[in-house]
Image (cartoon, rainbow, N blue to C red):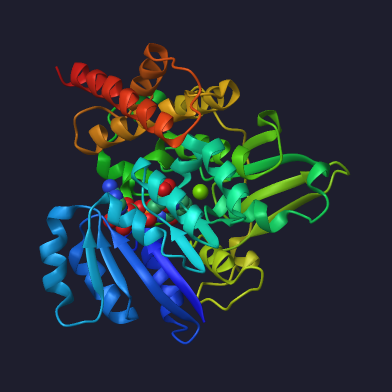
Amino acid sequence: MKTITILGATGSVGTSTLDLIEREPDAYRVLALTANCDVGKLADAARRTGARRAVVADESCLPALREALGDTDTECAGGADAVCEAARMGADWTMAAIVGTAGLKPVLAAIEGGKAVALANKESLVSAGNVMTGAVARHGVTLLPVDSEHNAVFQCLEPGNADKIARIILTASGGPFRERSLDEMRAITPAQAVAHPNWSMGAKISVDSATMMNKGLELIEAFHLFPVDADQLDVLVHRQSVIHSLVEYVDGSLLAQLGAPDMRVPIAHALAWPRRMETPCQRLDLATVGRLDFEAPDYARFPCLKLAREALAAGGARPAILNAANEIAVAAFLKGQVGFLEIAAIVSDTLERYDPAAPDSLDDVLAIDGQARQIAGERVKDCIA
Ligand code: NAD
Ligand code: MG
């Protein structure tokens, strides 16, 4: 029996994770489930799985959670510290699927307390890559990439040949606006941006896919996960999302992982690793797919991708600033306060206005993150005025 904790259990990745573990109730025991304040969904999942603990990050939702759990044996707790405490309970396998910077402390807590951490929260590696990988090494934890591209790369890695990797190529669907001109992108609405052609995901990452910031964040994520330099990381637009990424070796071999665009495939890989498990996912029928298309990314129409590449190359605090400003800009876009193209402008201006020293600790990262949010927030106000 494997003990499981899911951080962000009510979100898109969290729900897919629950779907897999609930199919094999004898194989898994749920230690803790956490959410921000989605009490109904959290309590339902806790009931179904018999979770030992359910935690809401938003403490004001704790009374509602307590009521929703009723006479179950599930303990409940509230507040950001309680989420970290749950992450530190020492599960055999922890899914880190909180969205955004809110996931940083819980991811570090899971690394400190856990055994295997399945990482969906890419923002923690973008903002605090060195802090996280340092903690992984110190605590001897296994970090299992869940982001579909990174999971694909992980599957293509050959033991003993880490130094023979020539290139890692992350595929990108190009999002819903792959063929739009910059001018056409000006009037894009939040509803259009969150409607991804291939994947069903949370709102923030859907907007990131539409701006291609998601691929930029994934370049930085890949840099921290795999033994390559920044200039060995490439992006390839592949609209069908059938090839999830590729690894090129020095002999010219190119290995790829293919599958239907269903997050349960990479989640199942991380859950069963180093073995494999059955999933209900649709099997890929390549004859029906018929053809696969590829093109180079267009950095002019997708400036967020360029900004992320530059932040990766510069290193230090740049990725944390990029990530924080992007979260503020995306939240403002989703609220209808700024236009789609202003997301890149807000990120770019924040990077221009703020250039602190490289962070050494998670506290440093969080201080940089906070300051970058403030600067980006001021820029949002300028857009509204
Ligand atoms: P989501 O918005 O659907 O779910 C987010 C989860 O985090 C929810 O359970 C929510 O309650 C919780 N949460 C939100 N704010 C919180 C806070 N302040 N404190 C504690 N918990 C909080 O997001 P998602 O699409 O499932 O994405 C989760 C993470 O996985 C993101 O980092 C995303 O980039 C990454 N990811 C998602 C997908 C996907 O297909 N959805 C694919 C690859 C990577
Ligand atoms: Mg991805």
